[in-house]
Amino acid sequence: MSKLHFEDFTPGRVFEHGPRRVPRDEMMAFAAEFDPQPMHLDEVAATQTMMGGLSASGWHTAAIFIREIVTARMRTNGAARAQGVHVPAVGPSPGFRNLRWPKPVYVGDTIEFRGRLTEKIDLKSRPERGLLASDVQGRNQHGDIVFAITSQILVERRTPFRT
Amino acid sequence: MSKLHFEDFTPGRVFEHGPRRVPRDEMMAFAAEFDPQPMHLDEVAATQTMMGGLSASGWHTAAIFIREIVTARMRTNGAARAQGVHVPAVGPSPGFRNLRWPKPVYVGDTIEFRGRLTEKIDLKSRPERGLLASDVQGRNQHGDIVFAITSQILVERRTPFRT
Image (tube, rainbow over all chains, first blue to last red):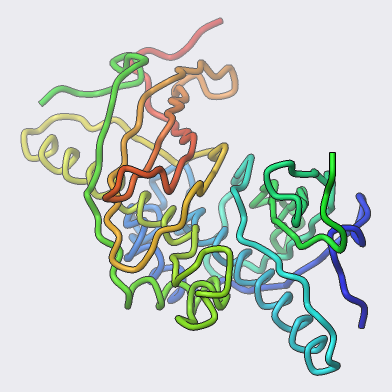
């Protein structure tokens, strides 16, 4: 179990999460609370929209992705701590970029997420941390891209950044 | 009650939503389901993070914003339909840009959202609709920006776009 700090991440590094199924009741519960549009809640009305059927709120898909990465990180951190290893602080995020939903997520679809580290950014304003940017895509069971985002997270550095 | 189509929106148009309070139980419920990090769930651990106290998942703040705009749109549409007015289709969104959380949202904070239409984009691929892009900011009760995003939505045109 290695201690992963900012310095240990190499551009091109790939991470994968899922597959994660999106059940109808969870889809409807999220939409009812945060995105109560007919295309997410009303089976009949949904067939008359651009989506052609009941689909998940894009924000629900994003929340599912966050849950997947947070769960994976907590699992890794837990294993590291059990071995007495210092776990570098990750997060919070200053923001994400390019949030896209190229195709709908329908009831019962299964999503797999795949990310690739594209940028390591030194921060004058936060010399103890660096910014990791990754391009992420979520695909359904047919291989269609249903979600894409550029994630950005702050990770502790082993050695403070000096200009 | 006018029928608002793509042609009716003028860059610079401003919309406002809220104020919306973020209660502790809702904050915890969202974090438990989608973003179970200590900074969002554990009062004591949260004081030792960069946030300095229990804070909302940024994705919860985003979901609250979506709820605000969807509710406002449904209210307007309902009033229009009650007068027999055709309501142009709005949404889905192809994606959002520049999602940022400059400062944390803490328990009990109140957020006000303000958006400004910045771009109207003609789409060769979808001549029946146009894309409206708006810069949105959410501020807490102290006036600090806690949320920012560039929203993009598709809106029905009165006249199809021809190149």
